[in-house]
Image (cartoon, rainbow, N blue to C red):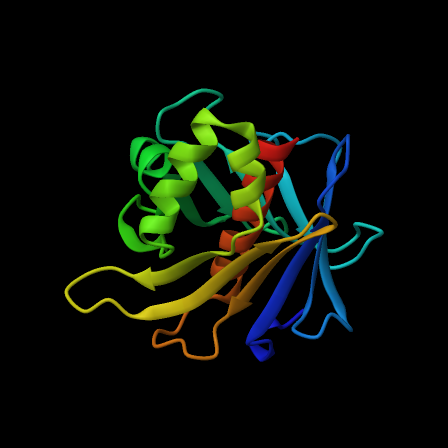
Length: 206
């Protein structure tokens, strides 16, 4: 499927589900289903595959963790048809845990070419520390939107896309907007960023 034509995408899952997660990728209005991720359990380190269909006959990409335990987890994104790597995502553990979410995007040679940065600013820090000390505060802040920017790195960073993460007691929704992208990129990169952020959020709440 050609995803370059979709400048806005949504990733949805049910807020309450005891076992596993089903994340559906749709167009901006939610009318057309464009992909699905199905997991038997909330396990961030499991192999993750985005399929174009619910029958799981047409895989788009795979995401697999390099290690079971690490401070900075690295996830490799590969083409399921060829087995060739597309890129990798590395989560900056300490910064993400205590300040705000920060991921590095790495090319197939291990060089950084981009990053995901949480842009919720001071709210991100307040959410982390209050949630750490209080489950009630965690539930309250769970419904406060989180925002992220995906961009290239270097002397002149360029925008790839913006992500808005919203929750209510029924649905968790992550919206991806690449309509203002300043850099040419493989659409699977921005999509994989959203899938991994969605699975990570599910793993925290499962």
